Image 1 (cartoon, helix red, strand yellow):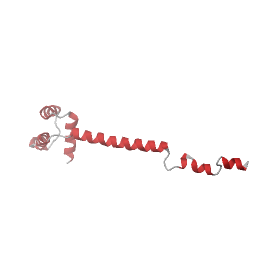
Image 2 (cartoon, rainbow, N blue to C red):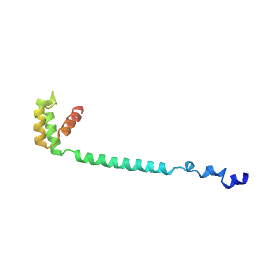
Image 3 (cartoon, helix red, strand yellow):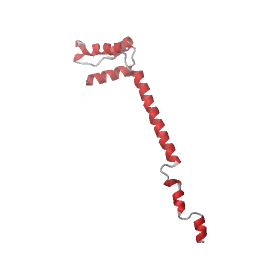
Image 4 (cartoon, helix red, strand yellow):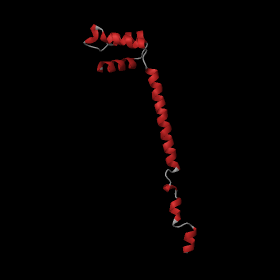
Length: 106
């Protein structure tokens, strides 16, 4: 019986198990997915940043609005002012709101 256990690889079997490999096939798939998803997320973030950049003319218009003496004390445009700014600059409400939030902090 001792010969049968040796033929089956009794003691050496533990060295051939897939768990002892540095990365199992399942782990390799997970790490490959994580790498590809993180790189695609970075590409998507970069694409979004390019899409959201305001033109220099728009930035100049917004700076002149916020630095105007009538708005220095209260740099919060009314809904009507926001509509006018959006119509004249072509930016969306979210971009306008974010710009004002960021520039009031600075």
